[in-house]
Length: 429
RNA sequence: GUGGUCGUAGCUCAAUGGUAGAGCUCCAGAUUGUGAUUCUGGUUGUUGCGGGUUCGAGCCCCGUCGAUCACCCCA
Image (cartoon, rainbow, N blue to C red):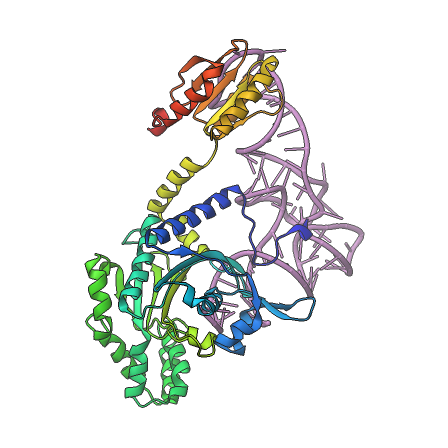
């Protein structure tokens, strides 16, 4: 049995979990399309060089990498942005700008798993390429907010942490800090809320800065700062600025971000960030060796932390229940009350399914009571009983418990008609 | 990659170093043409895995794998 276990950090999706996953996918997809994004997909496996090119050698420690049978160094993708940059730059002339693209798929990171962090996780990526305006940044932040609201996560449950990398590059320039310290400095800022003040002060003094000075600069970077003016005006007009909080400590790691950076995080449970992203105007040029210089911005939202947040948020649970009720189970259960009528029942099953009705029945003889219980278990709205009355059949409404006789040759049209009626009955109470 | 805690039936958990159990779930019957409740019966284990100590190990020791937490990292 031990040998049957899943690989460390990987998950099985049993039907209940798979339904939840599909709910998340459907919500991501429908909101992205509402914003005019089109879906794309990239390979799950790429050359390890693709990721080295972007971030350098040190990231291979977190890379799910190995050699294939021809000794090529390949990696399971840790993120989709490098693949997107390749796709966008190699065929950028084929697409009108701005390109609003989204993707949903698995990513892999070789890390120590714990709650909210697995080795395989699913990400929703939304990116806009070919537009350097702050309107694009606003569009992405608005999309991230509307996704959260669509999940039933409300304004008191989450917020957007917003910053801009240029705040810090300007600051370092003003403080005359050499450019080679930028990466080190951003790492310090990233941890400033978690690390001990003395340690932070020591690290800062090594590059000629003081903690007081940095803190004062962060405090001054509020929503009135000119770096946020255009974004603020845009999101205010949409009625979405109330979800945004300026937080200069958001720098999004070491990566390729050049301007606006933001995170979606929950306000009640102290979870890891639900989503994060920003502007990365230099990446396309880097990936194409300078051939295509295209502005870009985007964000990614993972399924794992989101799933934890959904399970802890009552209003989100309500939305999930509604979705599952509309998607799960069958609409109709065919009861074979008299085995002599099984052939007629099978013909009815086939005709109803051909008409698009979601339907199930017992493939072996079963007592009528069992068959009704099965109908109940599968949340069927109607039972159709094939018995001694044939060529008439019973249609029973399992919610109101009323039943009536109908001629077998009128069965399909009658069932299609009754399924159009709204669900009424005691189950809704 | 480093350190702490944990690992017993499908699930939630019991079991002084002395015969591995309960509840729930699942299956069947009570009930041969109608869903609930109830009752009755039944299936389910190399106690994560491998060694060691002991007359005897689910329990103690070592290793290993996994889960979880803190580091690390968070593209």
